[in-house]
Length: 342
Image 1 (cartoon, rainbow, N blue to C red):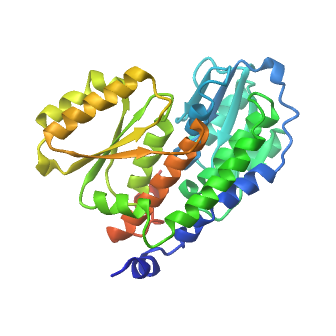
Image 2 (cartoon, rainbow, N blue to C red):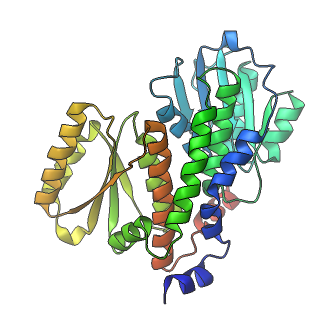
Image 3 (spheres, helix red, strand yellow):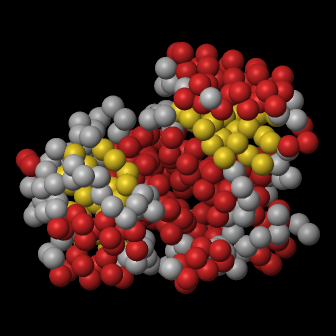
């Protein structure tokens, strides 16, 4: 069965078109004005984005995006409860694509009781009801996507929130460049021969381990891992340098080729020189153990664009891998089962 036949048979919700048109999500999010004037910027001393899954990864990407620019303590909260320090000086952004994520709703209600400053981001659901009832600024997301395939609507809505509150420098040019990037790469990865398809072919029959770097590209590692799980329906694991050099590296001493692991190194030119050296030494050990390494290194001009580029490549690679493994990249049966029984 060729690729076109696999897409026709397995891609029931046409995620191919969703990926190709991803740049339109940025356009929608950046042009979708909503009022945040009720937020008292002068009181903000820390920022928390609370959400799960596809609605949390945008928050983690935001953290990497402003690694050197966000002058506030920042946390991505993936749980029912906020940290104890959350108070009226905390900006809480409650992010749930469906608007019905129970952990996010619980954290939002706690933020209200703690008198935090709050912005809600969702397509509707209970989150929108709570926002309207409590006069909370609400960023309406575009409906019709699987949450993980709506990353760019979510991320650029979060970005616009910080931009509108002037908590970060003006982002207009970054947004323009991001639109151009996803437009270019969407056209490139939709061709019959492309880098994303090559990566999927290399990973077929293997379990991927992803290595990225804390603070710099942690969101890329998180995203690739989650997309292998949700799109391709397979296990994947990731670790962060330099931390993994203090523990996980020893696991390669017991590695056997029959374990069928392949390592994906997320590389960036901005890494600390010692981290670059750690990558080299770690890769040397991995190759000696008998495992193959795939290097992901964006050639875009800025660190921000490289983050977006690397994540987008993973989205496409895991989409193609799903088809090669005979799975519908849209289906989330186990997640739906779990939610139904909660």
